[in-house]
Image 1 (cartoon, rainbow, N blue to C red):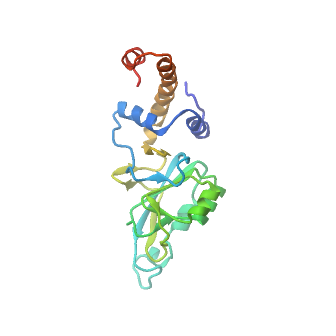
Image 2: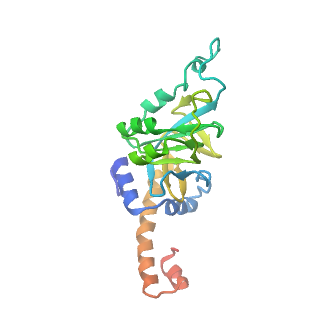
Length: 230
């Protein structure tokens, strides 16, 4: 029997009882050994946590904000179809973007404002964010390689969204769960979500017993033999 009835309950329960490292450990036991995004992808504020369903967004480098005479209509649109991608966000979704260089910011304050209005869960970009003070004021969960003010306008465009993307060697599909805290960002494939989180809640509750035993003086050798958790 599930501990949750829908995504909203799952994500609230995870924020209350879990942390990313624990779910990653469980996924290792499931044979899903390569699900963490690159180590340098970190929250803008170390207290930020993101958990939600992936809306993958594909970005590409360009060399002008707007081109005439192009064979690709997206090239004639400033930012490509970024606004359409942003407006398509649904409740509990994470805008997760990859595909470009690190020459400009992929996320900012006004985008955060719109995402909050749509009840999105957060953003993870394979690059930089900007408008840092505004995003911190909004407290919108933002994970990136760091901050950099240079605008994507004449440098990058969103060329597709809602499709599988590659992010630092990790496949991210629409509907996968994106789970991140200060220790890293984990991609949980949609088909593994139920098993991974069920086992994670069991492990979290078991770890509380281990912690109590250690606090009462039990050795780590005995604790691992007794509980099988460390």
